[in-house]
Image (cartoon, rainbow, N blue to C red; front, side):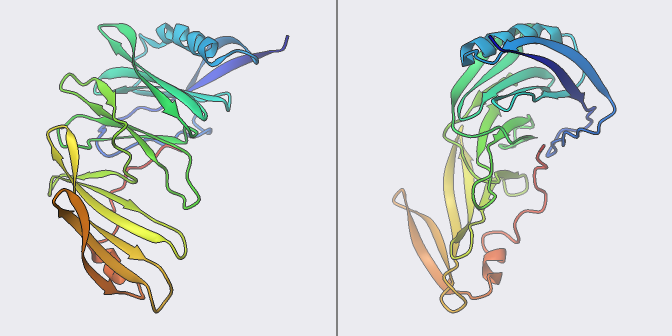
Length: 264
């Protein structure tokens, strides 16, 4: 029976202000610590690997570093960090499922799990609803247009994260000035670029309006505007645009510059 001995390298980055930033993990980091993750059998099931990794969580409970990531076997990613002064751990199995654990009252508790049909490409943190608490984003592998679908976890009043399967907005960003949520999507050639605005109503996001740039060809490309009417989206304006300039200034100017910096 074949075994693989994994010696896990935990990459540690010290972080100051957390708002709108995410760290890039680099293999060239000098500040690393070695932790033995134990022996994982190559034929182990997801549940067996999960139990092995969960058992190792207690090893990290007393560490004071604000960020660490463990990413070994390509079949899964084990991610551990501190958000809102609370430790979280995410175990993501490629094209399968993820499990979220949070340290509550000094105990590791599984608080969420969901199907995950992608690869854990990167991670991010940002305040997505203006409550001055950091929220967490798991990004899947880029699609053919280079866009990464986000899996969003929002913090509640007690700073506990909750997975929101209803929020999968590409390049999601909260605008503190307008109190609106921005989202955009870049399509490919002869495809559609989209900008959208949403507003928070309680704990739910409600569509406000959008702009869609249809790239047919240099003569037929056009921009459409949509908003809600009787609870449904409808097109209220359309203009020809062969350059794409009108899309850049539609809804808001430019594609937001203060992007979440994603960890690769």
